[in-house]
Amino acid sequence: MPSQVNALMRQGLIDVGPASSIEYLRHPHLYDLIPGHCISARGQVMSIILFSTVEIQRLDGATILTTTQAETSTALLSIILREFYGLDCRFLSSDVSLLEGLSRHPAYLLIGDNALIEVQRRGQLYAYDLGSIWYEQTGESFVFALWFAQKGFNAALIEGLRHDLDLARADAMSNLRDIAVRSPYAATIPVETLHRYWQTIGYELAEEQMRGLRLFEKYSSQLRLL
Image (cartoon, rainbow, N blue to C red):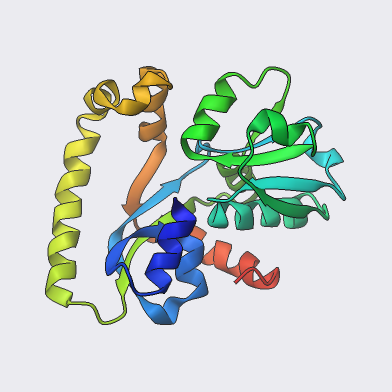
């Protein structure tokens, strides 16, 4: 779970790995960023979805459930609701099912495979893709996760890892459909959906992604989310 990985990174129990972008922005003094790699989206992300029983504009004053995994996505949702829609909402962390959660509250933020599964069977629910909203409002990519290491970690090992990540990314991008077919997720998510999802995700950290990350940092700082 992303939140658990963030905590382990913060405690120094993980030397290097992918973790939430909000964790890096909150504690930049603890980490060294590994260049060139991230998890991002330029528009639709497919796996970060706000499910709602009402239109998003009608959520002012509501309590919205958020999955316990979603630190970066909850911060993004806070920005979207406050800065882009002018809404004042409260957030409650939860691990109940979508059906149970929406029986008590009007909206629920899900991420990852849970979002990919539930969006296929959402029925009459509104489903808002946060990556799409961010891009429509800012024109920038959104960086959900970064690769980083503990401050001062072995530079040679970091460079070797970066090289291996370059090779792994190139190999994966040329074999995405085969990976989708063999994936255990294919038992619950259609192969075509998995393939399209992994094609949607951006894996390179370049200037375009850094612009989006800096804008996320700016909004997060303004709302005291860091």
